[in-house]
Figure (tube, helix red, strand yellow):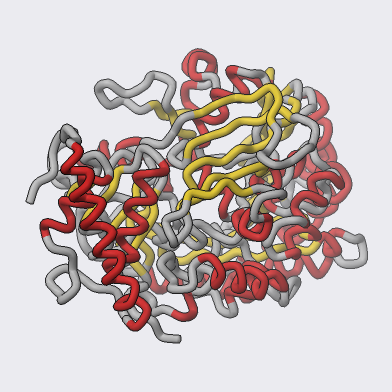
Length: 592
């Protein structure tokens, strides 16, 4: 069976499709309620060709079988290192898998949705036929949320419209209008930034990687480089349009179905339905954005411990405020690598913040060498995502989509190239409490950071902890389901290891498990300073223990109740998503 082209819909076709879908729904509901597992191709209950054709007609010809692109041709290596190419393929995901966990696998069929009606038709069809259903926008889930063989995929890639509002009021609310932006579920953050910042001279809080989808980041309550100033992404959510498991298209906000709206602000993607549109508040754009890079090398372990202590004190004194974000890394090679960004400061002000650390290293040259001198860059904030400016003044910082016919404004940061097609060996995260920055507690933090760095490189992502942010940003984040540990964390610690893409060929690195063990040992050592804090939903261990508590803390029971209310049969299931404890790891068999 082949679906091609856009069929001309006749009245009898519409009637036939409606009757087929309705009949399937009527027969399927009773069967589904008793079913303990989803059906796979070739099994009894798998839709017939006629039933698939009915779905194709109901979605205006947007159903197709999923096929993989050629992965062994002369251009394959180049294409598979391009996140725009991967994002344009329904059978690929931005990560190629995770050691002993999952491998990127195409669905059986895909509905390339272009409207909420397309999504609703696919949702009803999956529910009626007891199918495994997955949702993909840009496909960036490290945990494989948008990858499942033998499933029906709803792909929102083409739902990428952007509308910038000078004054927006959510439906049913009498609040004062605010500047905002509405984006389709398939929109990537690069395009949102280009519309809001480059085009309108304002800022929307999103993710750092340009090709990450807006919907997935918001649903996980993600962070960007400047979250220490503007808060987590979901805290700016004003309204969402979502198709729930019953096929209803709902507009939700603080006034309309507020519980479901709250759940979407960090309860996880692919869990409560298919989001088709989001509206986010925008913020006044700072005058400047900039970056700071510095690498210092200690000549001994003892000197390295003292270097970490000096940096922690510097951070607590000069950098623990809304102006600063991104990260500092410490590893077994006794190097402290600082790659931070700033907003609202001049380059001179940014350089001055690091002068005490530079002076410390300079006064102890027998113990330290400057492996990479302090580099401070910056400029008008409006140019950060301006493709012309980057081509002219920062060409080495970006990679452009070089495919024939690609938009000349599409790029990704060179520093994120290692994640394109990544095969994860291990990944772990932990919120680091701001109390550790108090002078009496800094030795505990330094000891744990140093001990962890003996095993593997440990990064503190300062923009992913909200302690030190404005009170307005913290208050807004408090009204989300995310583990409240984020509110009092000065950073999110991330320890990870990644191997090359495994799309085209077979086995992981021979030492992958040994490297994964070192990551685990490093997190164990770091946990001496923060033994009970949670982890970040979108960037965490696939094998996270007590994940309900780690991701959502005391908010999980409320999320579970909302899940049961809107998706009682568990149509939407992802790994370690709300309600997934009732399903097998592959999402096909109900276990509870």
